[in-house]
Length: 272
Image (cartoon, one colour):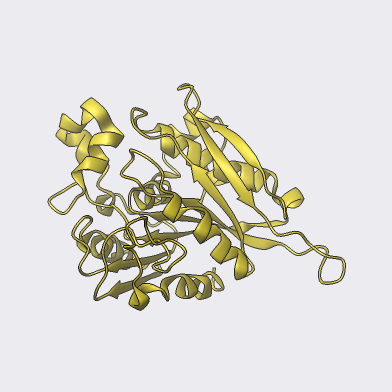
């Protein structure tokens, strides 16, 4: 396995993220030239922290399905938009630039995010071809274009159904600027260039309401972008894998009904 910790800086800010790689080695006995899709994981945490429960455990599960994985520990408050986004875009660039060495299929780079990490992943999905990102990074937009998104109970809307604490942490004092806050409401930012997306949520999520996933799905569907949405009838927010691997220290987070999401996402990836 190629397991590295790589520093990823947000240009101009001095803030650094850490990229942890979990790449499977090739074998002369099987296929020495094999290229695998990669899942780049953005843990949640309300843009205040990055949760361990939505990081390595998810990476290992995708590894078990034969995919490469990486976890991005991006900058959170007091870092502000667009620092985390530029770090994520730069991480995608690194995966493409090193695709040959790391045995990555550079046309199958999928960004996964949970909760506020879902907002970060979806932000790259809708903003990747905006001039400001290319200008900050100094590379063409195609270098950091994601080929797909996997969004777990994502923060999407900054409106009535939004998780306002996430946007307060993301924007800081700019949170009071209605136009800037509305600009982070991603259901309004979907374009024809947004990549195909897999989403899952629980109907009983009382932290980030299920409407967040529904609105993003509807925006994708309206533009004929391939999207798959799974709504589970029960489950609290922040389930991770929804099994004993990611249960929290208080014993909360096992929801058998929701455990199928990662296998469904793995199947979805086969059709990138």
